[in-house]
Image (cartoon, rainbow, N blue to C red; front, top):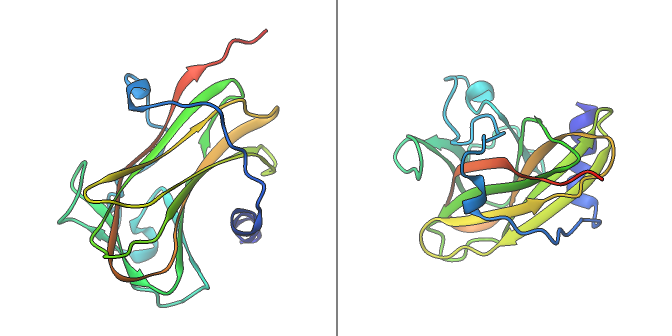
Length: 197
């Protein structure tokens, strides 16, 4: 529990983000393996706390009976489901399970977002890298404003600091007043290997 609180505090309170000069695209992921568990937000269980395997959900401020998040079998971009988030007055933070990364790897992360809200919020995504002991080594961040249809939110990352061993994706949906936001087709791919001198 302490780890989650520290991670959440680091994600929300820190203003020190690395801006990568790298730029990878969808074309770079061809023949690459998606490193995320459950990139399509598929249901793994009928039990609420186990349904969204591969992702952790945090609500800020905390709310015990928050009921605005559902796995939606009626709208999807890829596969059979998406994650549906209804309007609320709270931040919704999705954090992926950790996945392995290499110091000399180049990474492309993406999530597809759709909304029917007349005034959707600006959604942000981070790729956060860690050492074995949980210390954060790098943060790469991107934001997007939604338009019609499915919108990609992407992050390119590379030049990771020494000692890095794993990473997580974090997606933050701020409060919004009406409508719905759907997330689908998330991923992180190693798309480049930097030469080691």
